Image (cartoon, rainbow, N blue to C red; front, top):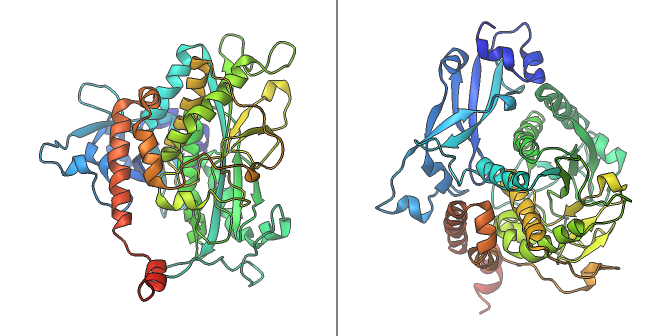
Length: 453
């Protein structure tokens, strides 16, 4: 490899290419749903380019490929963005037929300013607000997903995949090693791909749903962890396809089964001392700890529109199905929306259990951190700690996307933290998706209303 830029690759990417000739570079960026957009270019061309262009309209595209209202307006000008590589994100694409690297890019306008509604820029904006206060936010995401049988007919129910035993994956086998072994070949490829990409998996477990797995990532910098989740979704899908099955990150792919969450653990460090601001000198809980929880309780209802971005997302918030229905907080209590895991003072953290695995990782983490930041700045006090089964209480989070979007549109404080232009674009795209959903007549309606009303 003669190109100068390859000398500064991350360790895993350099090891992947050692003794080999790099063929291609995938220049990618996350759109609002979290889909990788970009261009694949020959390595020789990438070595000569400092940036490339994509139209800003990619951020107005809905999950179905339609366009949000602004992109269809007569006055809308589709401008080219300048996309510059972040070389620290260079990572192998080990499932490809040749030697390929993926590199995440950041979006700027022609004046060199960050595009405010690019998801990675939204997260960077929120992290910067913490840094301006002398804080360093730390997160640890947990990824839940299902391995399912190939499904080529949208009208057909999603079914669990066949395991090594030749039997369909079984439900209600949480933490079963036998159940994990059923997916052995797929999991082996996930580990191999992750190792080639330099990602450290903290563990893989079987969850409660049929064919549902969870991957935990080690805690660290929010942008770096969001990059990893963004990459992981792609590598997991590719690993599943190798074994004639699908990996899905839908929040609720199978009726009567638990949904898939992206639980987010947060702590905040003092940059000067390196101490966790949630713990005092004697190890006790600080005002900052309670203010962070208060911020989540106050602002999460409006942020749910970002953490639960699709109509399917709200099917996950069901009593007694391992998903929260309210914003109570409790210690080591998985029925509450906000959980305080067991830990020592140095690793005291707050877990947000509302985010679905279908959310864009940059936006889900940004929204969660934004709520905590507002709590710290506003010195919010949380409600009294909840003890017992929170499913016995009342729900206090939106139950449908339309209601969530109404709360989002009114959340001026969140808009200022995450970016007013992002808030505007996000609302446009999500309302377009919601209107499109409402125009579809479901099988339930045909079955029960066609001849009965």
